[in-house]
Amino acid sequence: MEPRSVPTEVLRGVHVHIRHWDYLIVSAGSARIGLRDLRRTSTSFGRTAMLEVHGDALQAVIIPPGVAHGFYFLTPATHVYAVSEYWNTTDELGCHWADSDLELDFGAPSPMLSARDASADSFSVLMAQLEPFQEGFSNWEG
Image (cartoon, rainbow, N blue to C red; front, side, top):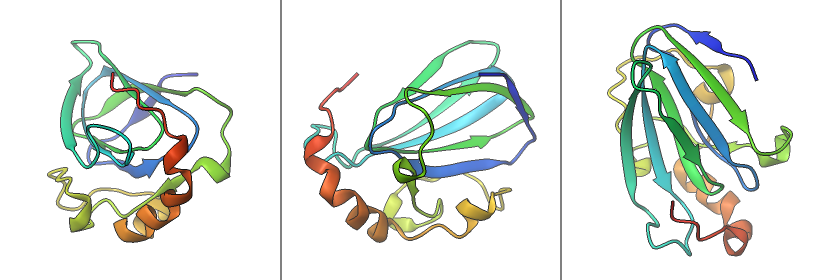
């Protein structure tokens, strides 16, 4: 786990995991974190949140399995990102960040995206992919 530098207007996501937890700390700069709870058994199912984190006020963002998330960097930033389990492609799902059904507005008119994120499926496809795993999600509410 090493700090990584990211330029302004990079958007990572939107991703969701079946098994692992994500941990993010922004140590310099600023980022907007979009979250949507996709766990049908959760009391916060369907709710969205948009957080802003800043390196001058260190905070950890902890994201459980079943919660969709994206990171949009508002300024050049340095962050530390960790996961609770070894990376596994079968635990990597996602949808297009600008899908209106996702109901997350990152305020990003034309962000820089990875090839994977630029070609991500729709929110409805993501929900269908998650369906077989819904009973296994924890009801941890944080």
